[in-house]
Image 1 (cartoon, one colour):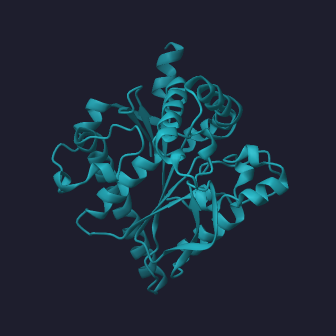
Image 2 (cartoon, rainbow, N blue to C red):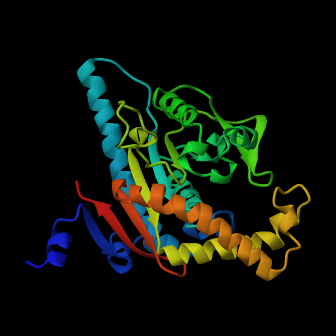
Image 3 (tube, one colour):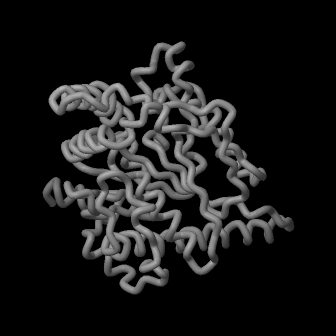
Length: 316
């Protein structure tokens, strides 16, 4: 047996091409023709009905299996212990690089899961709200490392997830503004008794293996995790393309944190965006995000055109 055959045989994942994956569920059960794709797709991301049918319908059907077994286990445990507990939310974590398309996938799954027969209440939370404020980041001297693990109030995020799993009512999520590039003081989003909670963020699967103390990690609260993967060169291009699009849209708003860049010429903007990628986003990807890929239950691999190329599912 050669090395490549050995690695394929002993991989912890089952590999599916897009075509193989699409055949797992060829008959959509949801009114997808009524879905407004413009409300789901991210900037410069070409989401279409074919992607929904071939990738996300099978994924949602697979998640339904996981969620059904999760509910059955809780019911059987309640019966064993002779008590009736509250319905505990099923938590799905979505990780991956900046500009890889996590937010679009999270919104698509939120929409499709809400359309499944049980009509569950599906809430979506991004970890942006758990970043420290810019003022706090400046005080700590790490404003230039925004998005790195140390820029998040991890204790607050873990407390939120712990409260969610404890079935607390009216969970509070700090509000984050991409326009102001900062936390909005005293503004909260209320999450009230979700059946399914999707948590999306670049570092949500991260652990600290070198820590000598026993710690709780964000991913400890996940019942299922997804990593969105792509070639680094493609992600870099998507980031640059998005930056140029934002210059013509969001950056033109005088209130935008990045308004100063709206009149920059193409060459200067490219140089600046490339610097941001190479000094911030790429090191974060290589050092913190990419190493968490193999911790996921499912990996979505994207092609250079932003469409899904293949799927990897962890073996049970």
